[in-house]
Image 1 (cartoon, rainbow, N blue to C red):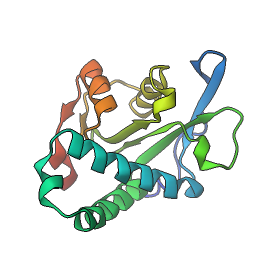
Image 2: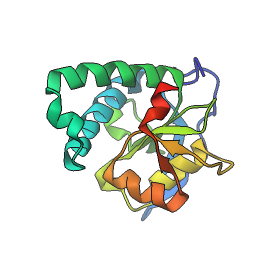
Image 3: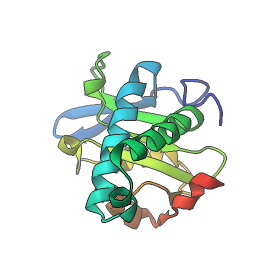
Length: 167
């Protein structure tokens, strides 16, 4: 696992994927310049989604304490997992162009995060990211609940297991 998330050996940028009306995107491994966006978006989405989904953990934990723990977790996973990013074909260095990403362990069948920005949902970007991360369609579990991810989890039969983080 080590090295793959940090831009080490892994898949090269894939071919263009038609995402929306006359809009092409491609999937590539994360780059070091992506890390601040990946980290902050993951943490923000988790706080909002956990509260929205009624998690007692967020209501019982003060935000600074929760955030410090999530920062350590997210940093560890971004460094040790396969991280694929969806971006427009007309690539720029601007991380605002990142449309979504998936974080998947390579040693175990676990997806930790699948995120697509709201403006590009419903065009197949999340499905394309998932297929790139899990090309053989193996049975997977996931550790981070999101509203959009729940629809994809139901589609592929993924099982929610937050304790996969502890194994």
